Image (cartoon, helix red, strand yellow):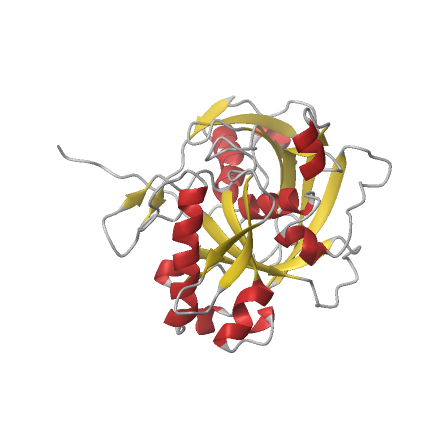
Amino acid sequence: TVTYSFAQCRVDKAEVDHSHGDCGNMLAAVAPFAIERGLVPAASTLGKATEVTIHSLSTGACYSAKVLRTPAGAVEYAGSCVVPGVPGTAAPVQLAALGIAGAQTGKLLPSGRALDRFDLGSGLGSAACTLVDFARALVIVDAGDVLPKFGYSTLDEVTLQNVAGDPELCGALERLRLAAAVEMGMGDCAGKDAPKLALVAPLTMDDTSVNGQALACRYFVNPGRQELHPTVAMTAAQAIGAACLLGQGVAASALGGRPEPDEGETHSYSFHIGHAQGIFPVGVGIRMANTELEQMLFPAGVPHSGRYSTTVVPIAEGRAFVVE
């Protein structure tokens, strides 16, 4: 077992944001790093994956990472796994997450509701939102309630370039995010990256790997800075997957139907999250509802765990010396 803390560092300013929570990409790198530095022994059996338990000091969540290739006690990064939006191929790292419900707010549904509405300002009315905290505190916004008011016809038009040049759209989304943060019990989030925000809509792209349990999203790093993520964060994908299991709400509506469990399973669901560069698959495990309210909100079962696969490759290595 190793511990892990994450902070978001600005490159253009001397600022560190500790509100971010966990990072799915960085989590995937923790296990190979721990093996390489001797913090965790590699599996001694040839062909057996090395499993590393990671305890997050940022959120209290616990993760299990399987590094599939560790021959001769070393991490082998070469492989054929492809993650849309990530250059090249590499060996996969499989992650499972426990204790991620309420990771940043203490509640799976911070407002206690499946559906909320928040004002966009400038007389534009309100937009439907689902507030969820599952691996990440996330404001899930109905794209259809927002985009037509700013001249967008489809979610496909929400690109990095268009977002960077659209202060009106981003200003409205930031206004909504600030109000949602208060409702989520996170206080004034101005200048902070959490909670995050995602626009969602039904998936329209033609992809033969999608089995119907899919939706499209555009995920913002921070609408206040007009920053759109080029794909989707792995923590956000898990949060969206959890929201798909609600009986109603923005993600459930975009999904277009009641989700079905994985083949041969009763407590595991898979979803495909479409983004600008492809599809990211994510899994959500459920537990049975403990109360009538949970049963009403999550008729298929209450989100309990998450899982996903990604790739890791070394980029750089070095030392820094600090003179006091």
